[in-house]
Structures are given as structure tokens and as C-alpha cells.
Length: 93
Ligand SMILES: [Zn+2]
Image (cartoon, rainbow, N blue to C red; front, side, top):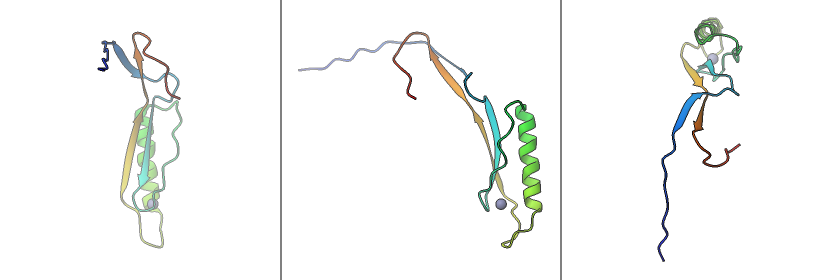
């Protein structure tokens, strides 16, 4: 017995998720894993970027027992949503 599968082409569009904060910029200290504060959703991505950088310099200015923390990683999160042009089944939660 053979099983046949049918495929069809469905147009999909990708756009910022209207139900989520469209972007967040945060910095993480590589020495202690401390994170910059959650940005305000109303801030522009540039303002979030600058705020995260200010947090890094303030964090590096602190005196820790193991020495100063000079290395950071920044993460920019963009929230997107795919919308199929026709129903292809329910969304996962
Ligand atoms: Zn640190």
C-alpha cells in the first residue's frame, strides 16, 4: 500500500507581530550574566540601544570583588508573525 501526500503552495506574509512588543534591545554582562533592564515598549529601537549601552558603562564602573566587568553581549529581539493567505490549520500556543 502506498501513501500519497498532497502538497499545495500557500502564499505567506511576514510582518511584526501586532500582539507583541515589536523589538527589544538588551545587554548581558559576560562576567556575571546580569541583564540590562527590560526596555519600555514605547522607546524607539535606537533609544533602547543607547539605554542598553549606558547600562553597560554603568555596570563596568562598579567595583566587584573579582574585578571589573568589561565584556557584554547585546541581543536585539524582533517579534514577527507569519500570516498564511489561506487557512493551513490552527496556530500553536
Ligand atoms: Zn557583570
